[in-house]
Length: 239
Image 1 (tube, one colour):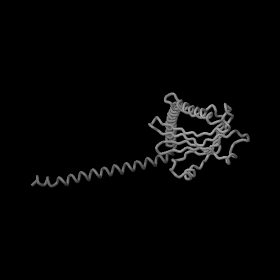
Image 2 (tube, helix red, strand yellow):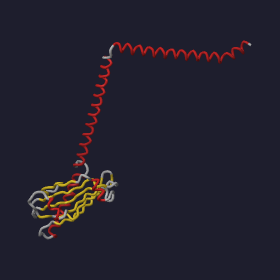
Image 3 (cartoon, rainbow, N blue to C red):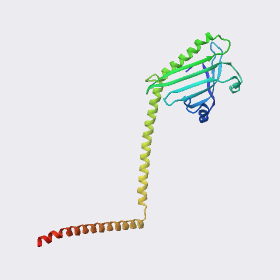
Image 4 (cartoon, rainbow, N blue to C red):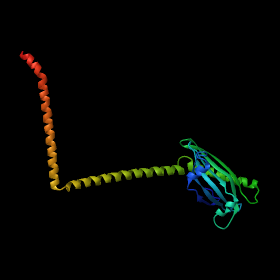
């Protein structure tokens, strides 16, 4: 988004974020989700190219806020610069962007930048350059996040369409697997030897006969109980 930037590179990422969080103090500054040393170089403009070597990170907080921060590495870290050709060193003494949600669809942004351009240029001449750079960042953010037809809106729509496509494919795949399983069961049943089929039929017949006999016994027992309970009344009538 910044036409003045010639190169931005994450040179030395930190992969062990658990160790980073322990070093910072667990939960003291939120949860560090990204950390590393990066390199930045600007293009030739009204001033000669500048380069920076910064330690940057991202801290996430339970409230949903995020802090993106950076600070310049020291001179004794110059061996971490890429290549052999050196440019005038600029230094970000402090850089941070705080993002705080204000609703499900909006958030506030606060940007802090303390930048030393370097070289022999007076500071009063470089202040407008820094100010213009920050304004360009906010203008670009307005295009990306500014409601409908922005880049974020298009990204969300693309993700929703992709998810809908995945659901259709998953449903079709599950249906196809079910059809194959049903066909395999049918084929397996057709391939059962006749001797096994006859044995199964005989076993089923025995079970059905036992069940029928049990039902008949239960019916006879119920009829006998009914007759026994009615016998006293019959004797009374005879007397």
